[in-house]
Length: 166
Image (tube, rainbow, N blue to C red; front, side):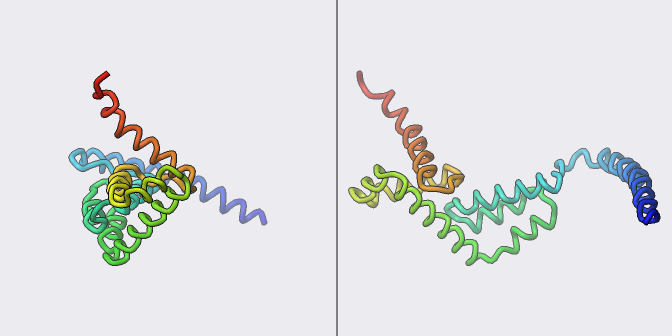
């Protein structure tokens, strides 16, 4: 049993030495790469990847948005390849599902939005398209989506209110 503890101790010592050598190599590589954009850590890169995919799901052309996202030089090559390798029909279908689910959450969470849709479906749909493109989908439940939409409406109608004659 003690031998296992000895191995673990040996790994820790070897690990420190290896980290020191890797740090030196990274330092010299970093000096030569001043012109290249900074690479993100694994977690940062994946967070950025998820952000780009989420934004693509609300873009007018989600496939083009993913292709543009694949040009982000701060992403590791594997994540850039993943963006380029996404099935175009699958991307389009996913974006449609995101929009549909968001639309349903909004109508279930906001009686005002539902009434607007019933009164003038074309006008409401045009407003929803703009909202969907401008506001990242962060709500999971209908009341949250309704709050996001209400804030968006208020932000877009505030300048109009200010410019009215008094």
